[in-house]
View 1 (cartoon, rainbow, N blue to C red):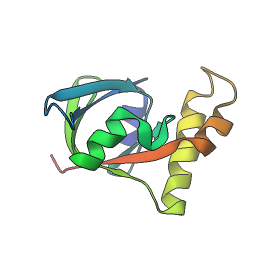
View 2 (spheres, one colour):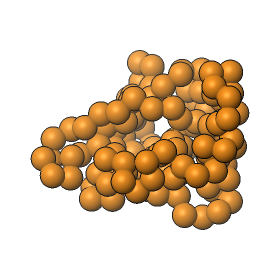
View 3 (cartoon, helix red, strand yellow):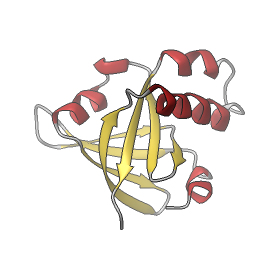
Length: 117
């Protein structure tokens, strides 16, 4: 997984397993790649459907451009790791919107750890 190549893409598509239906649930969301993880920020915090789905079943598939990756989702609880997401994402999308730094400090950081291909 090449962070710079992936970060050229504007969005990723995260598919989780619906906690009630068991059916695939896909969202389009901003992201940043770092090492073997993709970071996303949930503005709705733990109430966000995709976060609740990850808590119920951590398996996820992420599509970025033409590539799809299997991974394991988790809420980021370690402060140093959360700081990575809270910096990378607003920096990447600063050209699109003002005030992202404030949003990033209140949004819930979520990581999807990509399994080796």
